[in-house]
Amino acid sequence: MKVFLDGNLVDEREARISVFDHGLLYGDGIFEGIRVYNKCVFKLEEHLERLENSAKAILLELPWSRQEISLAVCDTCRANNITDGYVRLVVTRGRGTLGLNPYKCSNPQLIVIADTIQLYPEEYYSEGLKIITVPTRRIGPGSLPPTIKSLNYLNNVLAKIEAINAGFMEAIMLNDQGFVGECTGDNLFIVQKDILFTPPSSAGALLGITRKVVLDMAQAIEIEVVESNLTRYDLWVSEECFLTGTAAEVVPVTEIDGRKIGNGMPGPVTRGFMETYKKLAIREGTFL
Ligand code: PXG
Image (cartoon, rainbow, N blue to C red):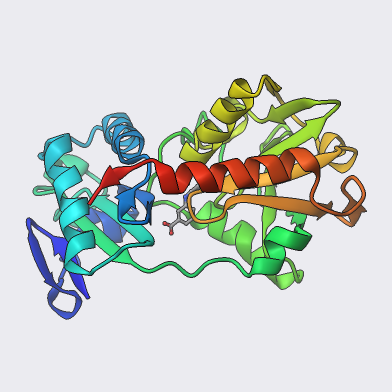
């Protein structure tokens, strides 16, 4: 496999990063996960815009133009013959000294990995996921804005471990106020009385690209959308629930904390979004 590193496409075995890179030493960096459908990169501009915002928020000056990064993504996909796959774009703070000071770092590193994607088992989409709330709370916006897609995922990793150890695939993370934030790598939606609800970023949600696609689809079909604080109770008594993410796309949830959601099967609103999303994903995108 060829990966893009430091301006070149190199064999993955030759792709080396300094042990003094603060991306490794302190998780000081940012990333994006992007899908390729049918030789087209889905929502590339949106991902690059979010990357730029993440960089700005952590005072990391990107030494590459958006066009250069875009080219690196497309070149890496082409070099690996990716027609359908997943692109992991990572920007690290670069090589520095021991100690947190990012101003001692130079040469941020741009890494692009383009691979095929391991999709979730089909039964999750037909039967729905069973998920639970876990003890680990989402880091509050006052500590780390959830809108920054940073390389610090330990908070989410701990929550994921708790879910897996309890026999579940995915975890709901609450914020310090006890409101629903999101899942470990997906945003969360519920449907109640024909209204679509999702937590705002102030509650701890990443502003997901897939979340935005769903919000736009809802607007197009005139489903009312409310971004508001949600409690576990709101989830338990919801008629429908689903998760969104670049890898998962739109995945139904049919059980939360042992409570059946709706009739225990994916509901009509969720199924509508799943279908429309699939159609959009293969129709739109930046051609490789
Ligand atoms: N919340 C979090 C915390 C995420 O990391 C999403 C929501 C969904 O956002 P998008 O923009 O994908 O609709 C994410 C998504 C990876 C990886 O390994 C990426 C994510 C999550 C887990 C793993 O590339 N990002």
